[in-house]
View 1 (cartoon, rainbow, N blue to C red):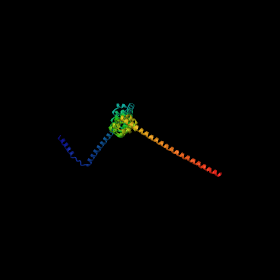
View 2 (tube, one colour):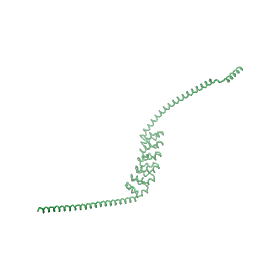
View 3 (tube, helix red, strand yellow):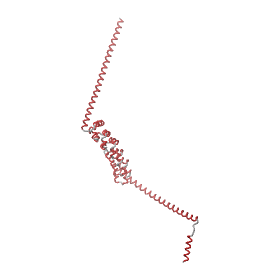
View 4 (cartoon, one colour):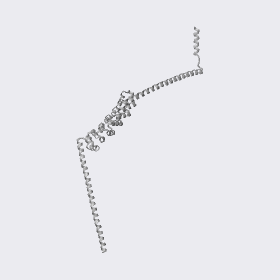
Amino acid sequence: MDINNNMIKNMINNLKNISYRDDSFKNRLDKNRLDKNRLDKNRLDKNRLEFENMTLTQNTNTNTNINRDQKKEIQKWINKVKQNGNALYYASAELKGNKEVVLEAVQQDGDALQYASAELKGNKEVVLKAVQQNGSALYFASAELRGNKEVVLKAVQQNEHVLWYASTELKGDKVFALKAVQQNRYALSHVSTELKGNKDVVLEAVKQYGCALQFALKELRDNKEFILKAYKVNKDIYTYVNYDMKLYIDKENDRKREEQKRKEKAKNDEVCVDIKRRNKELTIINSFEIIEDNVDDKILEGFENIENIKNT
């Protein structure tokens, strides 16, 4: 037993004393180790790439199926909202955010805009289609588009009362107001207080619609100079002015009629004077012609007497 133990110890000691001075042997070991690691890595990379390709193929097939199903669902809802735009109410949140579906809905019924996603309520193309179909759809548009001149004017063209839904800033815009009052008889009632007292805006409004005067500020409705100017462009305002302004307009009309009569009389008098003058000139000319004729006759008679005397 002791011999075996001693042999084992000697063998261990011998192994411990083995020298690795042989560099070529050590290099071969390192090279083999590196080659093995490289092979393992390549094998792992290949397996991972195969797995990723397989997963991508599966996902592509899945996505293809999903896209096909989505298209069918979208087309189904397009057909529904074409029949009744308000059917959009029952659509999923995803479909309420689908531009194609919502466009079809608002073209069938502009008020369907209320069921669209917040994003599409702020989409100019969608909102324009909605307000062209139903001006009141402006109420459901985003705050930004309720301040957009083009959108609001389109809405006002379709419904003359929806200017109420326009932004406060837009209601105070003079350029916008001038366009709005040309299209809508009630537009002046919805613009800012300042513009209701603006002579240019009010005059443009009454030029198109005499009834618009009732929405102007009292200070303008009591302004004689402005009322006369407005009356010149549209006599329909007479119905909407107060009693004092009616009296003033009547008085001005009487004055103008009298002035017109005087002008006509003066013109007639001038014509009469001209006629008398021309008649007098004609009388003088005729008198000269008579005298000339008499002189010619006397001269001829004298020549005849001379000839008779010569013959005798």
